[in-house]
Length: 260
Ligand SMILES: Nc1ncnc2c1ncn2[C@@H]1O[C@H](COP(=O)(O)OP(=O)(O)OP(=O)(O)O)[C@@H](O)[C@H]1O
Ligand SMILES: [Mg+2]
Image (tube, rainbow, N blue to C red; front, side, top):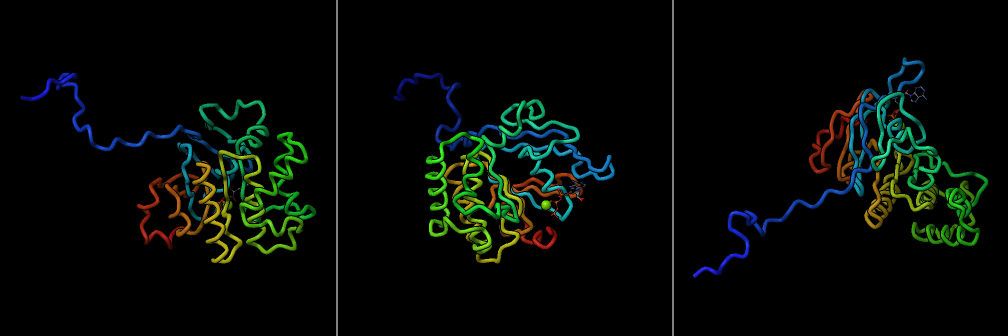
């Protein structure tokens, strides 16, 4: 005889052992019809971008030169503001934020192709630059900068000026600096663009490790399809619009040649 069911049979889940879809993380960025014009509308860098990016995602942005990748990244990091359209961060309209500088200081880390280290500061000092906004004591800044440089394998070059570092080493320092404010958003614009292939692999290993360990939302612009494939998701831009948005494992090998 069958045991008596505590729940009526018609209310039982159909497949109790089937794996459920993993819960989706919160939406961090939500863009609606975002446009960015320059030169009184003569240059249409972004022409109506619609996008959602979720917490902890690693998103690669690819597309030809001039397609609007850096413009989009600048808007996400509040280095620039759209001509029209809406960008929401954690549900809040960014154009209504009273202090975009504070948003950047609290949430965003930047990594650029040209490293952008301050030439007159040592590695240890460069990493402390984003900490000034946060009001930490000097001792706390130095301790934390030392830890970050150790985490990127640069503990032996703390007192070096940028011009005494190799390209790969400079980018390591720049990554340590980008993490100084413990950002939940990491924006990287062609971070391996000035590096040889061996250094590129090492820098990507480092960025991916940081992204995974901290569950950081990472948005990375690249021309390199092998780097884009490391992401969870690849967004392709053309003429200021998103023309494809797909999981990285669906990227066709043949798309490699058409990217840059
Ligand atoms: N400050 C600006 N003033 C005028 N035009 C601009 C400005 N910034 C960008 N543009 C133009 O907007 C378009 C998009 O530029 P963007 O830098 O976003 O391209 P990109 O996809 O990052 O290109 P690349 O791969 O070469 O870095 C380009 O045509 C560029 O010339
Ligand atoms: Mg660019």
